[in-house]
View 1 (tube, rainbow, N blue to C red):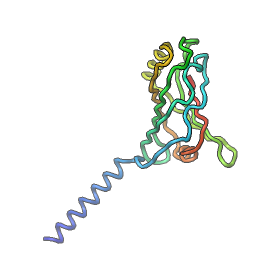
View 2: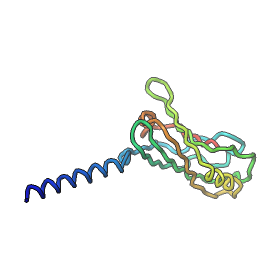
View 3: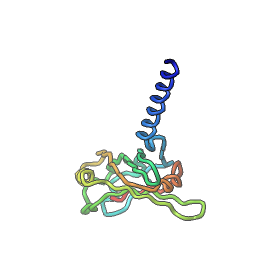
Length: 157
């Protein structure tokens, strides 16, 4: 009886560990870069966000392609008037030079709902903040090349 209980407990523990491992996916994968937003481009509106906006990342999924969500806290600089029609999409480019002198670049995009919030934010007064959420599916190999490195982080707005 005791042996049967041990086998049952061990079986339950193994099953629980398997479920936990599957449900976590890439929960153990932490992605970061050493610097914040380093530049802006895209339209005459690109001068509105202040440089240095902080970024945070969340990585989910498993395998060779991972889902990544980046949150960038942007703030209006001294320019507060909408200078141009905004782009149809807002992107975050994260790129870095590798030891072999090649560039690795990932591109994350704001969805339609977020794009509407960005357009509203562009016409707000100086000092107004917005958390822009970017999403994308990227090769794990590219994340590995950029992880914890100094990168060029460009807000395309």
